Image 1 (cartoon, rainbow, N blue to C red):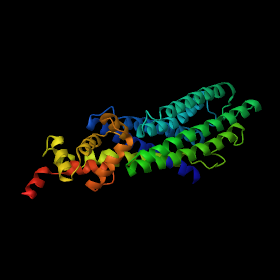
Image 2 (cartoon, one colour; image 1 turned 135 degrees about the horizontal axis):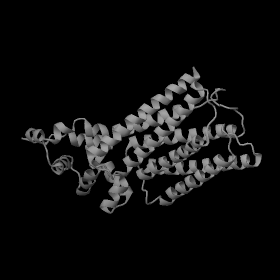
Image 3 (cartoon, rainbow, N blue to C red; image 1 turned 90 degrees about the horizontal axis):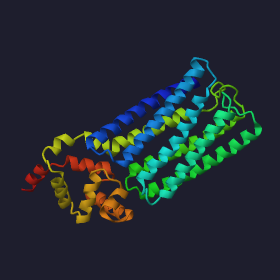
Image 4 (cartoon, rainbow, N blue to C red; image 1 turned 180 degrees about the vertical axis):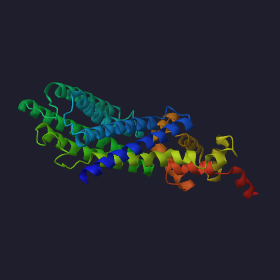
Length: 335
């Protein structure tokens, strides 16, 4: 039963990840905005999650179905590379949600830690590690355990730092919830996986941790991360773009006319009208701040005012309200 649940979670996680990538691809094509940094970083993150899930599914199949417990060096190298890139890709997602330039050093620190960790992993895996992730040399094993603990701690601190600023700087509740869910899940998995790795290095689990039914939450974490990403992408931009737009946009070929009408109807200021247009085009708070030569905090203030005047709670609701607004009917009602 335990193995079957793990097996099912890996399959479901892969399917959800594929759906998420389709959503992102359609958004980038429909908006003709391939420079949207958030979606590019989320797409990269979702791709690495998918590859990680696929790799662990292959591990599961080899051990449980084929009874092949030995893992050649290339498998172990790919395992470490994907895990390292997974956390760095999440840091990049957080960096693109917040003001990346303002926190540039933190992102660079994340890149440096990832690079050093990959180099260490390659050396240990190729030179000292056995086919069951065991390290027989006691001195090397101790050094690697301490190094892994330090890498996990530093990565966790960087993710926590970026997450805190992401929560503070995000006006959208959807984005805040996405940051919290994924960061908590990845930090939990990082610590748990680190504990399991320590046991594997010492040969505690023999040829397979799955065979002794060691608690493995990898499938569950990947499933929930993929689900959160899918919900975020769908609600953030996919549903407003693909549901209800064609019916209304055809009645107002010039989107600026529609935005001007909404701004006048809801008594937006000139600056709020500019921010509204940039929000509709999918720009992040830092992007808007750069375009209008104002601070991110000022952008957040304008967006809060827009939310209040339009009686909405998220960017997706703003986009849906704009797409669903029928100017001609509104003018008729006024008459």
